[in-house]
Length: 334
Image (cartoon, rainbow, N blue to C red):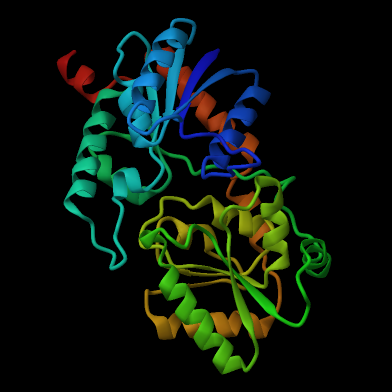
């Protein structure tokens, strides 16, 4: 089977980026024998989509199907009708991109509607959470969160991890999983809860943004930290939560995306409303408890290792190529 992937730029040492889960999915599919070629949306801002369209035309001839990651990649994939298209929506492409107050601007709402339309025109839709599946109804979406590399993300000795990173002992470190400059990640709330927790505990706490960190160092940083706080306004199925679970890192999160489902039954973690006092209390409790969690066992029980997820995606490819999946508009007209 030959699959052409369209995605945001793949991570490099110089630019770790946000497409690391896609890169791992590509490799896990290749391990199952799928021939995967990749078109990356990169280059000059106003020209990269046109350039990707040209590369798509050149490579699509030899592909059996096209798999687009992120809504805007789906637009390019659906610009042709010679090959079937699978689109994986990732989060804010269906849920919108909130501002610092959690509000969706008109442009964000319009883009969501465009992506809902694209979902009706492609052969199969993959989403990361039940919330996202509701957005594209009546289109039937396959809910498949990204898998986690359990060999890379595994528990390590926290003291050894801090020593390798050159971090001084005597201070606890709290991981913030994302770019602090993106309003939808809620960095100000994370700062406030960590500052309040430090004052209550009478000890220094350092908030560590997980941004610009090389992909091969992420697991080390997670193991060096004492807890992770997630304060996003919008998420699909944040891979960083599953990666932290695989490292048994305690997590304090707002109710967002599929995080409550992922952390159900995980001892040492907490889900809270977007209330500073509740989040502050939960973080203090987690830090005072001082234990790692049972996240890895729960993650394995949920079947979210790379191989299991790749096999689910491969089954969708097979259904599409066998004609068992059709775009909604095609099904209505046939």
